[in-house]
Image (cartoon, rainbow, N blue to C red; front, side, top):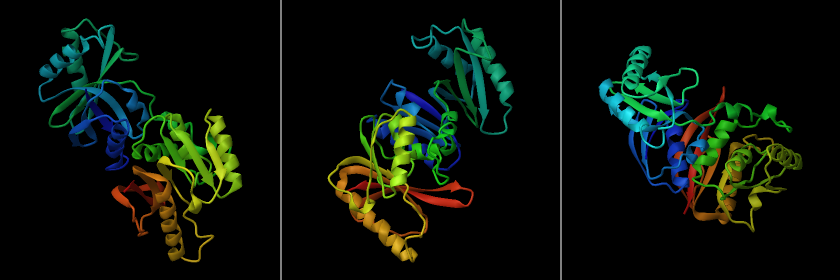
Length: 331
């Protein structure tokens, strides 16, 4: 099945990387057929839409129908698609057009809607349509049948201030979700966050059906993390511990956002040494071929011995805070 993704645009590379990482984690073979101007078209060997609910940085997801510069041809292809078994029970539709250039989207919505209605038994319903035709205009015209998902407002409801145990330095849930997705894991896999803090990363992993384990050197954070996990109906193995002394466990992924402060260090050199020691510790427990996702200051040069660098992304976490997300594969 071919999928059409309209990416969030909040980062030049990260949204597309997230889509590909989720497909890889779910074991779905895929091929990227088009990637330009926030549009991503993927031919994936699946008819199951469930993987889409994991995504954090897509605005619209659709079953891809056609790329064309002829609205009549597009309408014909859409009518053929909505007449099949997946859509034949719907009675109403609407067209929603997103311009990728300066074209008048309202005129295109009206014209395409008229052409679809002319050749189908569907009525137009702009408020609660049974089928939404998502289209995007550039030099060409892209169209698909929108797949209804949870939307990104769900992440706002999980911001730190809405949890029972609050910490002002907690990562936004959307970024936490992306970090977990970049680890290329699936439901039932084990995720470890050895700097778990109040549990933001583990919450997102748990809500996607992963087994969650975590530790923090601060006992207050461990209690707070457990409290937050219970609030979302999640259960994990969270304990007080030193991230430099990981042992006696094997995990499918390590996803973590370690502290950046220097309160325990006299210089950047000591902090970098700490991070390198952590990488040595992580290497001992992470299965070969599995992934470590770690967020670090952009300027730090670490020794990734034992890990291959798959990709990295510089992301603005707050107004004045930019960090680098490293995607590392255990060799």
